Length: 176
Image (spheres, rainbow, N blue to C red):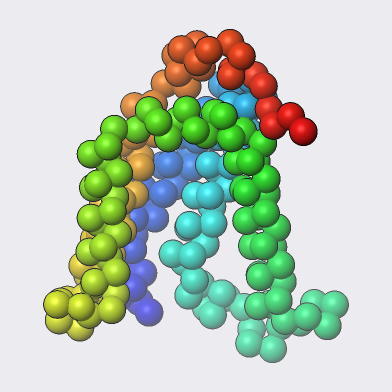
């Protein structure tokens, strides 16, 4: 558990930097589409950090914790479900903005992410990588993905991006 935490520190730092940059974009947003997209990004990075720090509740929460006759695990699952539903709802609302962002990402970044995800999976499941080295490979691959995300988010210019969008796609939302 302690070794896990030490290996994960660079990734957590990168994720916190991603959250801070996304919060900056939330504040700078000129449209509802942009605001909600970046808010969904903040929540996504929050969920990823929570997944990365999954061992923390064991350190700080008593095993017999109960609130309103529900365990900590129940409350945690309920809160995370709400966060996930918010993310999906916000991204569905901003689907045109999301699609435009996804189209603007260079293909080589997608290929790098897929390669690192494959390497992470291989390390986690000790596929062609020794068990002891697998955890390190897994964490390094995850940290690589987080570094790519931070680099892309840092270089992304939402105001310039929004101005390049056609006016009919800039502010419209999902119309039923």
